Length: 118
Length: 114
Image (cartoon, rainbow over all chains, first blue to last red; front, side, top):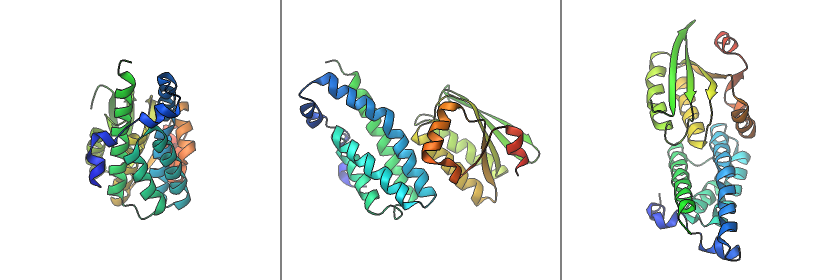
């Protein structure tokens, strides 16, 4: 794992998202809630695709998750997705497990952010 | 197992039937589920996983199922899934879980498939 992934600040930095939402915090929250709904299925798609040695499935899942993660400011996760996307079947099970754990940490950080008082 | 998930084990016709009961197989319950399953698989790697009373499954849960499948296959067995609730079925279809697991409507059919 790259060092940057261990830094909690890199889990989520929604400043660009808020700016892109016209500084409307509620709109940014809606985007984040949509991310929470959709992204677990993408991670599952990557994991099952890798297990089935289906490079296209892994690539598509990683590509989609990379884009949405970058949009919300989950840059470290987006970087991980980029790595998986570039070599879909070269990612080891251990790396995929770490990727999954990192995703869970990111989700936790999003939930914490959404619960913050305005 | 935690309050969110209980695993009821029944041995039948040389198969370990695991019935998952509870709110979620997710990031909070998956690690303990994996540990418990590793022991069960060691004893007998022929597993039927009944999901009828499971409410939610996330990516960590899917990871736990894959881990269980690997352990079972390493031990010369397999994992068959049955009684998948509607909400989990949607996820399974999306990730095409049937490429990896045989999925059955009824528990008896899953047991008989071994």
